[in-house]
Amino acid sequence: MTNLTCAKIKRELLKIDPSLTADDSGFRAQVIMVSSLQVGPNIRKLAAFTKYPISEITKISRNLRKNQVWRGSKVHAAWFEKDGGIALACDTCVALGWIKRIAAERT
Image 1 (cartoon, rainbow, N blue to C red):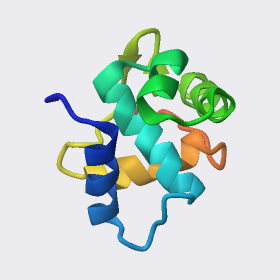
Image 2: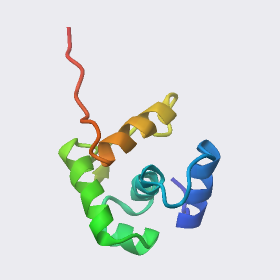
Image 3: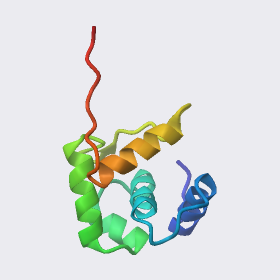
Image 4: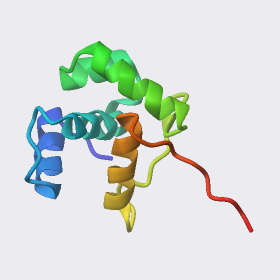
């Protein structure tokens, strides 16, 4: 991913869903998630990059780590692949603690 500013990330996310506002919890979660691709899933780095409170990032981090979206220093997400919008929406719900990411059973 190229070097992006937080402002650029916010602008791009608002293009995806113009009904969101800067104070919307889903939008803020998405900013944190996409920012993690730029600076890594590190709470302090994300707080410095996004200017969001560490307490907010910590909650999101816990949910993403518990569901293995963030593992160690890696982000495991398909947000920019073919159906990335669906993946981003689902992982936003994971980040907010609304759903859990469950691996599909193999048959």
